[in-house]
Image (cartoon, rainbow, N blue to C red; front, top):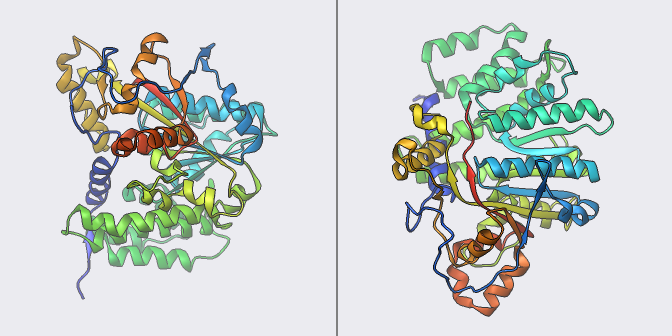
Length: 451
């Protein structure tokens, strides 16, 4: 019998290649090298109602969220990935919501297997050295901004023992090699198993036989099994991890050599169904979501809760729609916020080093910026995805408010614009903004400072 296989590197490359194609953060259109400026020709929209979001003492004014905090069970934050200003606001929202109310569950778009290590770190007692957890999390927590979030969560949990925040990571395994190293290997060592290590050392890659052996061994391990110094690595946790692991592995191995489109068709439906299962199944995070208020942070597609019917029906496959319209515990109790950035620059250090990470999308953005501003001498902000009529109409506001972020009604205002001018159905930003209650737009931000 032929054994299908896929190398660890192929798994990672396939995922990020598809991410580049499908994520509008770096899927350029129109004038790729546009530079952010206040001098923009007016489009077909003369005015959009906005309000400036000010800041005080280094924190954003978030009083506009007070009603949602009192009346909603879920705050969905849909972001442009890797933008420092957006991360700052997301973090401020997490702690503001917990100061004004109670949102003790923070759901992140990270691999499920990282949940245990993240929660171990943020619940580490004050004065205890828990840097070993951060070291293990390096493949997942890859930026200074992400480390800052974990440190703020840890500080919060130390200061508020009766209002602790728990992190729930609901994505499938995105780095199979890292999952093997940080989760599977410690558990198999606890079992005293040596066969797996011999198989991996021989093949130097994942095969059907190796994955089947991992799965079977975990399923038949004694129920009380847990890793002594990492008790969250128990049988139930490993069973959940293996389901995630197989989703990625099976999609990759079954479509090997068939191209990205084939992989996408095999992978994404299974991924989306698994995410929904994680937030609804009591064996994972369902009980937490049902019994508590939650904040979700992820890509903008995850947070869409309205559908216009204009080429956006795929939004109904994501968890924002599911939580709003299908999941009984949260139905009708979701408030969606899109955080969108128009242009970006890069940390100065990126000009003085060869920038090459495992993240193909981030590499693409850094290279694109360097093409426009070679050498870093002249510096500005590169427009990410080209202005549309909607975003062009916001530039005069940024000119007046010294480039502070603005907020606008998403679904309600986009409906009115579309009714007044049906030709705007082709406007990319209108279709994106339509899916959310509120849209916060940043004129510019710096890319994450990677570790």
